[in-house]
Structure formats: C-alpha cells, structure tokens
Length: 340
Image (cartoon, rainbow, N blue to C red; front, side, top):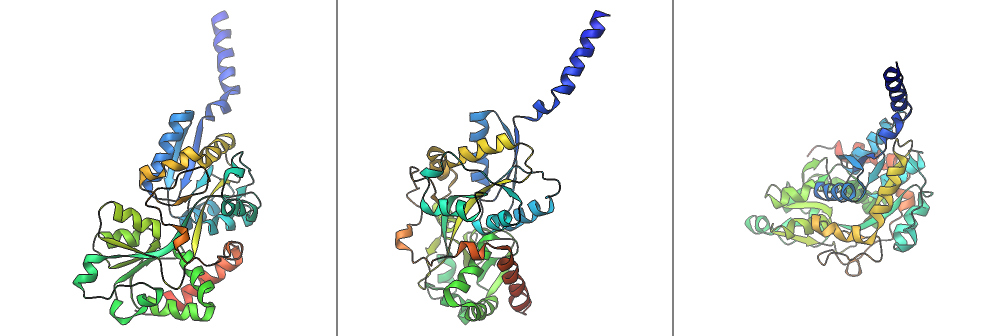
C-alpha cells in the first residue's frame, strides 16, 4: 500500500511539474545565412543548456509564417533578416515588446529600430544593398564593367542579371523601396520594368542570386554587399559593387514572437545575441555585416559604410504594412506581370 501511495504521489508530482519539462527549449526562426544560424544555435546551447529547434527561411517567408501562426504561435524568436518586415510584424501586433540590458551598447541606428518598432524589435546588424558580378563571365561575354544601377538595364545585360522576388525576400523588398526613395516612384517603376527585361530569374532567397553568380549561372546578382563579400572570400571570382547613384541599406533585426511558448528562454537568447563577443563571432560563419553593438569588432572584410553612398532610408514608412503591401502589389502588377 505504501509503495502504491508513493507511486501515486510521484505520478501526481510529474503531472503538476509538467510545464517545467518544457523549460529549457526554444524555437528559433532564423533569416540570415544557414551557417550563421547554426553558429548561433551551437553557441547558445553550449552556454545555456537550452535546446534550440531552428528553422531557416528568408525574411518574407518568415514574416508570412509568423502571420499564419498568429492564433497558435509556434516560434519564440525571429533572429535576423531585413528590418522592414520586423517593423510590419510589430505594427500588426505579431511580436512582443522587450528591452534588453544591452540596448545602450548599440549603435544609434539599432536603437532607432527599437524605438520605431515600439520596443518590439531591435537592430542586430546593418548591410548595404548593391550587387556583385562574376568577373570571368563578364570577360567571357565581353560585357562592360557595371558600376551603377543604370548599367544593369543596358541591352547588353539582357538575361545576365538575377535578383530575388520582393514578396519572399527582404533583400529584394529593400531593393524595391530603395529605388522608390532614390529615384521617385514613377521613375523607379520605369527602372524596374527595364530591369525586368534583363532578369533571368527571380529567386525566393535574397542571397541566392550571388550564389548563382559565384557558380557561373548568372553574371550579376543583386544582393546585400556583405553576401557578395562572402562569395569572394570563399574564392569565387566575384567583384562587389556599391552603385554610383547611391543605395539603401538594411537594419537586420530581431523580435520576440507574440505568445511565445518559451518567453524566458526567448529573452535569454535576445540578450545573448546583442552581446559584443557573440556579434564578433559572425566572421566565423563568413557573415560580413556590420554588428550593432559598438563594442563588437566588425570583420575586416565587412563593407565600410563610410565609403558607401547611402540614402536616408525611411525605415518607418517602408516598413509599414500599408506601404509594403501597396508597393508589392504594384510590383506584381506593373513589373512581374510583364513578359520578358
């Protein structure tokens, strides 16, 4: 009888303590390159003992997933990817407000992202938009060296340019919003229609075009410049270009998902990801973005923002739900729908 009572008590204890067994786990939605995502998971698990289930998708795909799961959230943290969809997620109430103890250590642009999102997101890195080209293919095809956005719409580059689809890729949406801010909307869409004639493929992932260029599948890939640097560092014949007219940039961001099942673990990861020692490790994964913590050491290969002609990118406006949806709809109707 005593043994039976003890077993019954143990069973009740297990049932009562059931939620505690869920502690020490976390689900991470990750939008930068796979290698960096894996490095972050490995280091966080090693330091905290918290087990991380990680899914890697582009910014646009991740935003769509979080929106689809809003009534039954499955993720805890969304780490990385362009800041525009993070701002849209904040606006739509899909993410939680949180202020890290490391906020004061961050660059102004990262803190501004936190303020613009009503504390529901924060900047973790920055990267300038541009393009890269395969030097060997350029020479083989007898093409002139492209230095400006205007070069990419020249007839000789027909079928030689690749970029992502802005509906799925934060990189490509940054390209769309950059053109509008750089040229004005009417001229920007005229440009994008002309560029469409030279595009050989719209990829799902923002970094895919430069990987294709590195493999000799396309001559030019429109990407964030740090992604082109990654290919060059690995030995690919890629030349990185910061367009002569000027260009936009991203504030790669991080957000805690509204209704996160593992909120305390999510906050631990959030603080972990903002530390200078963790951000400095990015170079180990061949990630060459500019880190948001002022005490972090940028990789020497990272593009120098002081040497890039950056526009005054309006993150608040172009990260808003209405503006994003309007521009994407217009791009679908006026650009993507046109024959090539």
